[in-house]
Length: 314
Image (cartoon, rainbow, N blue to C red):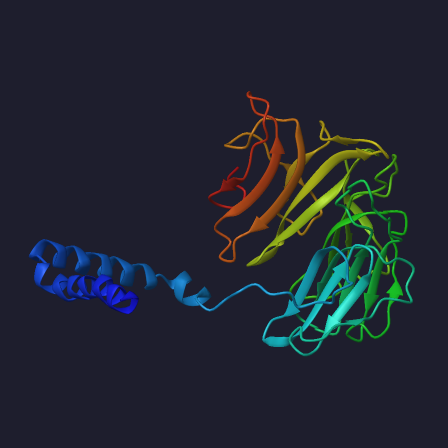
């Protein structure tokens, strides 16, 4: 009896399913076709095709710690570097399947930024000391350079910069490097701002400086013209119990002559100051500059991001 009852309950359901095609009207058929067409159009988007099979997964190392910087090599899908805020520099030569520490014998394990030279993949520059000045940070002892893809390193200066926001290398010349040095997070000092070397780190020139309380946090090339650069200065001070963030020293700058002179960018769509931290990125086609600006608006909230349609039109 129980089996018969169960059969009696499922039989109408089967009949209902079989009857559905006969109940379809032209309008529902058209709606289904429209939905299918819309779905196909959605899947035809280039970004959908590009990232359709992409899923995030942990690739290790499992004790590497926080990371603010990583770099690969164009045309080489197997070699990668990343810098940990408390674990030095790590390298993979098998597409991130395994990682090896390559910086353990150096003076600081706190890495703020690293860069691999596009014109010589054996040349790597590392800025020590993280510039994400949280409550638990470790300072660095300057800039390191490797000429053998990370096997050996040499400290090449800016030892008192303490915290490095960004290191970038001229795409055509591995001896031309810019460093955004935040400086001492817990107090004033002079070795901060935007620095440039033209001789591979033998000498450094401070090309953009505001004051002893304001440091460099970001710097970027125009991808099609390395003589055009954008830089961000950040006035900040950390204590064990607080963060003083922003002030008249913070600002966004542009250089048209390879970093020799700089002009502060204001108005023309940029928010009013005072500014806090600023992040910069130039689009691959050089047509747009993106600035993520921590700024106070009339409602007391932060503002960002901001875009310039053409580099330097702001």
